[in-house]
Image (cartoon, rainbow, N blue to C red; front, side, top):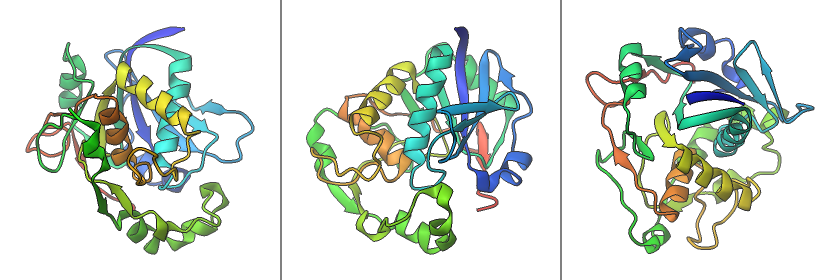
Length: 254
């Protein structure tokens, strides 16, 4: 098994193959021992996964926005079966314009938190009591997304048939890293994989403990799983939300 420092994992979809993955593709396939992979879902893939064109990882999974947490976790599970990873995974959106010097600066840091990135309140989150995960709030995030992307329901690759999005509007009232760019260590990745395996990767699962839907929005799900296992979030403040960030979030080609 090949040993690497870490994996730069760019989550994308077939919808953006000819747009984001062309305009914002990183210049290199590896940075100081960190290999770059681009993840695409294909619900009808014969095998569990296929690697094409060196670093395009196609996985048998729904290719929808709703299933992003499932796509991420399945891709991590596959990556860990291929590589011996020394540090962890840098999870990236497919619409980021990277400052490669700043990227290498972060990758070169000898000590990294188990979970870090940029958050809205710009501060750490420490879960000292799981009861905080039971506090809920309403969210129209996914509902509004699909109001603007109704054609996704007709795409068989998205696996959205018979799903009533309007039901899934209650989430934990927590914060963590923006989903566009964050780092998770080997410890965090294993915790996430184990948790998602325990619920059979069902992102529509109503969590028994919190009695809400923590998995429908990927970055909320990541925070929920890690906090449930007492892994803290550490604010970096320079991933995407600074004057000199690792990457600028363009949000282009929606």
